[in-house]
Image (tube, rainbow, N blue to C red; front, side, top):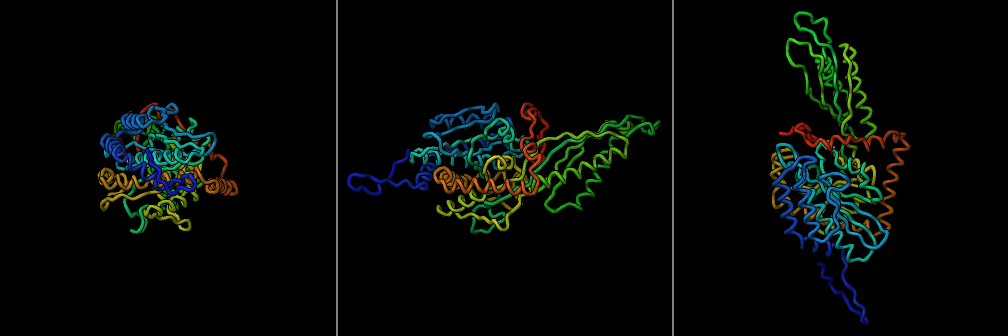
Length: 460
C-alpha cells in the first residue's frame, strides 16, 4: 500500500522517509472511499444498543477484506468485534474504541457513526505505520457497542478486553466551536460527569380509596413525597451536580390506594466520590418518604458510568500531532472543561490511560448532541472530512505512544499519579466495585422496547 519515498542513497545505503504524518495521512486517504461507504451505511441504518448487527457485520467485513485478523462477536458480546495488527514480540498495545449505536427515534444524533470512522481510520493509519517501521507492538480496533445506556465498555472491561492494554483512544463529535475559539477544531482535555442510574420501588397496601382509605398505605404518596423532597434538595447541591428522575408506575385506578409505585433516577457528579455523596442524599429522600408513608422501599442499582480521567500526556501528544497537520486543537490543563454528560469511556480511563477529545463538526444553532439537528449534521460531507482528519491525529498519537519510550513512560506516570492522588485523599475504597459494576441481563435483554439512552430518550 505505502510507497516509501527515497530520501538519499549514500554508498549504496538507501534511506527512506518514514514520517508518521505522511504514511498515516496517505494510508487514511487511500481508504477514504471505503470509509465513506462504511460511514453512510452505519448512518443510514441506525441501531440501538446491543442491536448494532448491521454496523458490526459491515465493520468486520471491511476489516477481513483488508486482510486484518478479526474476531467477530468479541468477548462474548454479539455486536462487539476486535481487529488487531501485531508485529514482533513484546512492545506496547494500543486500542482504539469504536462506537456505532444510535438513539431512539432520532438516529445518529450523537454522531456515533463518525466515532466509528475516526477510530477505524486511526487503526488503519497506525497499523500501516507500525508495519513500515518494523518495531514490535500491537494496535487494535475494538467495537464497543451500547454506549447509549447499555454500558458496552463496562461489559468489555468485565470480559477482559483491556487487560495488558497500554492506552485507549477515542474521539467524539460535537458542534463546532462549542467551548473554544474559532481558531481551534476540537477541545482535548475534557472531563465528564460520572452517572449512577437506579430504580426505586415503593410497596404499600391496597384499600378502597372512598370506603376505607385508612386501611391503605399509599405507595404513590411515597413516590410523590420523594420526588418533591429531591426537587427541594437540588437547590442545595453543587452547580456541577445533576439529579433527574421520572415516576414510571403510579397505580392502576383512581379509586384504589396504590400498593406499588416505581421511579427511575440518575445522579451525576464530577467524581466517583462526589457521586457517592450525592446518591446517598437522594437515597435518604426515598427512605424518608417510605418511613413517612409506612411503605417499604427497594432500590436497585443500574448502570454506572465513571467520570472521565483524561491522561495529560495523551492530550499533549494529540495536541502536538494535530498542530503538525495544521489542525489546531484547544487544550487547557489549568482551566479544564467539565462536560455535564457522561460516557462509559470514563470507566475505561480508570483501567488504562485514556482520553476522549470533543471535535467539532458544523451544526446549526440549537443543534447540540441528542437533537435531530445534530443527526443531520453527523451525515454531512464536511463532518466526514473532519472526522478523517481527527483519525489522522489519533493515529499519530497512537504511534508516538507505541514508538517512543519516553512518551509511554510519561503517560504511565500520569496515570499512576492520578491514582496516587485519589489514594492520598482516601477515596479508593470501593472504586473498583463501581467501575466494574455490571449486570449481564442488560446485554442479554436487548432493548426490549424499554431501555432508555443516557439522555433519557425512550425507544419509539
